Image 1: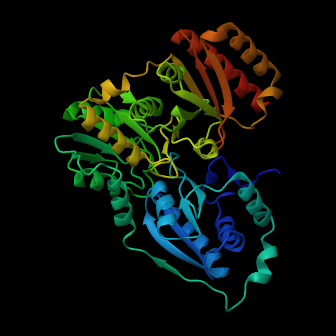
Image 2: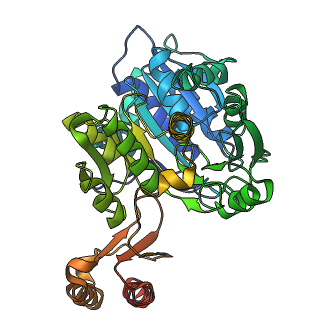
Image 3: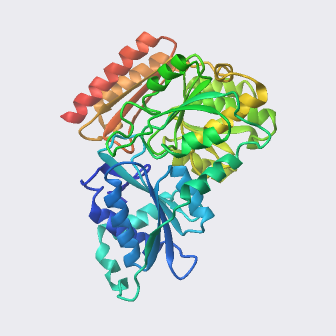
Length: 451
């Protein structure tokens, strides 16, 4: 069916414009309480958010919808997306809702839903939700005066997640002597990330910890790691940790101020787990966006790599289906199913820190296990997401360049599932040629999608 609301990561868009409106949030709250399974007499949902100003109105609207269908709501306030996933299961809730547009600017917002097991709702459930969102009147007969739920805030949500995160760092290890710069993107982790690192013994310099409702991801965080990189060099820190607005992504900075992306983090963790006999089926699950260098490095060490379409939810689905334990994306989503049900930037950072402490290796040394193949990525806005195969001139150019690269490179062109953008990614031996070819493809797609 045609999807009007849900994209690759829940519902997302400009706040106060369809589909991110109060009406949609209200009806979503009703629908979730009406169709998702209940463990008890009342539907119980946990609602968390990041630091966007619009989060206040969306949490109120969602809660009103849940309450109208005899559901109870627990508010956590600002908290990372993976914290909501964890607490949904730990607190025996029927669902968890995160109000966040992740790495997007403040004027966007989004709603993503976790089931009782802490995993994001599958496509077929989101399709069922869409039916009710298109016609919410079919729920009216279930709204009776004596079937109204209640809402309340839980004050210890951060402490619960703090304890969970630290339980995943070996008790015999300490971060004493480690100097860290952590950039919280003025987002959901602005309190929890510095606190966890300090309590484990690190010397922490924190930035991006002054949210005002408008500055989330604004020049800071995982999308803008250079700010943290500059501080790492200036402060002679051992590493930098950059998180995005909802803290499910991690981009590292090594001790030299160089950026270490999700591919390198996955490479070092996969190799470590294999050496310790803990990498299930000796396999890493990643997406088509990951660098060829990642596959080359792991294949050379006897580790299989499996690719999915872009989106951490699809990585998780593949991992669950086949029983794999590690997966993620170049963008910084690192999924460790032995520890969590979704990407968790802070958890991934602690696993790298554990590796550093156990081996005595620096971040740059750990990241050197893979050598990147030159890659160019261009993101640009499009007016209409016309299927690429229907763009005659663009398709012909893509086929021509793909044939020219042969086995020495690749061409990947796709639309974003969460933004009105197209992404053109090329890999090959010549960086300058990659830039020229990528720009030629991008320019042609922009022209054809605007006609």
